[in-house]
Image 1 (cartoon, one colour):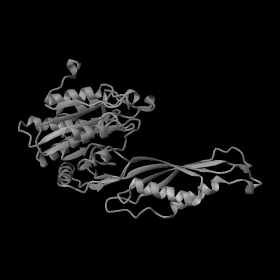
Image 2: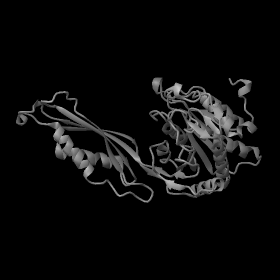
Image 3: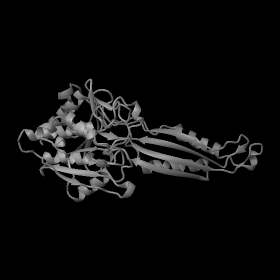
Image 4: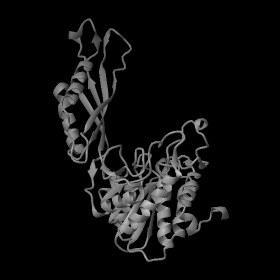
Length: 390
């Protein structure tokens, strides 16, 4: 139960700084959800949302999620985010304790201030301001909140989306509140993300003395030929919204302490960030074929974090851009760079875009956000809701 000091009025929910501080003060390091989603649930219920708790997974895989909806009309606009944060690192190096939520010199310091409790707070406040107007919604608003974005993402957003589809709760458009701006609020809206593929290439050889190479089969030589071939030709030249796909070798390991022994095995690891000109299946086939051109005894182990996706700009995306420009004076560019996000799952069900706070300090000691940015983001979200007719 929430104490009286933690009770919420709609007027208080209209202040994104108050909401952000309350969420930050609830530690929720992946995979432990803490009480953060309970606090958020109370806030949303105060605004009139019907909130459904959706835990998935068991044991160490247990993941806390919530789906909340206000209204049943169309258009149905959903906001997706996560309450989990990464470990704070060396707590002693923080200017203030990471879960204290201290406001100093125009900044809010705390774990999750940018990524992404601050973003959630801004959308809560945007909805509170919309509710305070007293006019009926033109459509409906929902929250898709997971506690597993910073972890394996196995029982988070993807499972909630499956539930939403089964319950006829899929939105017409989804806005993900990840911190998309590199330096200044209003720089960038993400309409897609590159796919990510990790590969481990293991070449088996025949161990032997370096003075008698004809009695051995050096796997290092074969592995180097494979890696050279992988880098010889660019994967593509890029597309309208995507930069060229890239392959980066991240590790080469032989495990051989001796200077006079040809090793039995050599392995390398690599990552490919790929645009919409490729699928993971195509890249897996290419890797396997190329590796076997240079080594018969080779294993290729693959792990795919996500496929590339692109949401071609929709009317809702245009309205988001207008809202950003109205508040910040900047025309954001439509971008697809950076790492992966849960938008990769959402894009399989509905159009999606990402816009949130400045991400310069995410996952860092002394993560912080400008108080002015929290207010501006709440204004942007509020204007966006009105522009799309909600």
